[in-house]
Image (cartoon, rainbow, N blue to C red):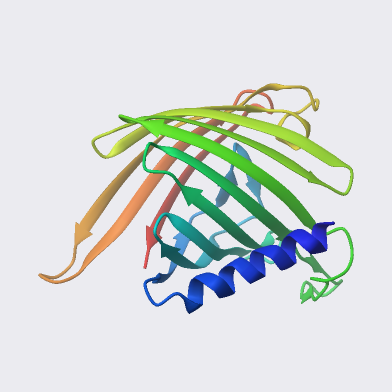
Length: 216
């Protein structure tokens, strides 16, 4: 079933690419560390490339994260989502986590092994307020994550709660509380460098993170 969902995402990507009205947006983000929903993955900075195809509210794309320390943080994902004009967005993610051998190099196991996790998502935003729900399944995992947020000016606040992988005891608890700020540093008359920073607390694991990233 996981392979079927992955194939479906690939087909949706091809459809979007063949649409002459599709907007293609490649890019890369570089973060001081990779923190996702209150949990840190790997050690050292993370390089996160992406390619996104968008047309008439429909988006498909690929996103990845590679930790520069070669420590357990190799992730390559596919996604598809549709954004309705009134603020509702439905999506489907295919998370792929690679593995490494004894020398630290990542080995290819994309089409085999328990490396894929499928996650349908539902989100709604209006006037700065946002709500999001996600349900990840695969390889014995069935984890729920819920998040509420509010954005204003160049800052946003968020509170997330989940179970399973998101918390210390696997029970449903608050796991992701933080604030994020964005800024654009003008380097030349024609080029500015987007930068963002987040302060994140996971009350469940008692982990505290400060993360800064740039977008290219």
